[in-house]
Length: 218
Image 1: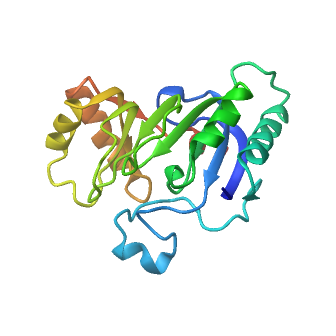
Image 2: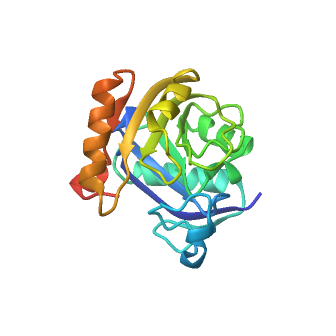
């Protein structure tokens, strides 16, 4: 299988339960909820994405002809930080990473000692072998991944008419951690205040901040 990667780089995980953890981020090109073209945003299922996932021209991006070739590139990115062979952690994101992530790549990375994580919109079944699954559901899409390590609900989204009712529905599903994350943009301050109020009212949920943006890293 040919893998198309927008960008690939070492960083720290900025959000959720693993916030602050050293990681290699591999951003796959493509998404099933938006083409990535601005002219299509208004008609897309997901209209608030702030990430460029089109093409393969980002830092570390490219087309990889095999799982081994991509796994070796990820390993080289980890080593570039002078990190040793322990606690290796790779996060596949996008776009939607499950359009490309497959068992061959998961196996190749496990053989190199990596823990494999994904950040998915939850509309595509997760292949076996993924070690950490973070689901970030999008209003208007059909959620298929009802069991995961982590749920990250970005609020408020267009279509969230009953936000607390939506939270109650997610509380009945099998997610180990539940996070509320304020929608970025011009209303960020108000959205953070909303997320704080909801976390105080519903202690099962925790606040997730985009710490990578706060400290100025990718």
